[in-house]
Image 1 (cartoon, rainbow, N blue to C red):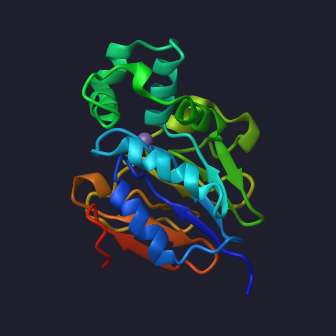
Image 2: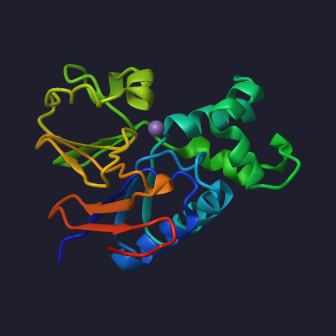
Length: 218
Ligand SMILES: [Mn+2]
């Protein structure tokens, strides 16, 4: 059996769902797990999500990508972005998962270090992975970070990438809970924190697993 590459969509503080989807895929040590970013904000247990991702690094080949919410959290931790700015877009609920005092000092160094390890993109022979979007005409290592982290696809999916590889993205939540499959691009953010599903997808055979915020499969 060839080794699996499994992508996981936006988790957004849904630690119970992450634990459940890991159980559902029956994670193997030689699996490559590409998490598409946005680990924090919106859902109630961002701390629990980052704790679990740290454990997963020891259980498989974890390739964590950076999402826009993760980037803003790291910016606030490092003092590059304002704490109030972060709080306004999800920092408050994220900080509350660490304790009642809502202080940056409650976030352990190992969580900040994890966010610093997150990558902007990943590629295999056939696929590439980014949090949000891409410029179709620019090589992956030259992409603009604002496009990768913040680019929307709700008003139109980018053309196929110049590499010819299939894009796997998150970020643009699919409110109906279904994957957006444009052929050359698949979006697997299925809105777990807001009544949808956390999606895992084996990119080679397109097998999909979905669990809700409470960890129930469908
Ligand atoms: Mn996002």
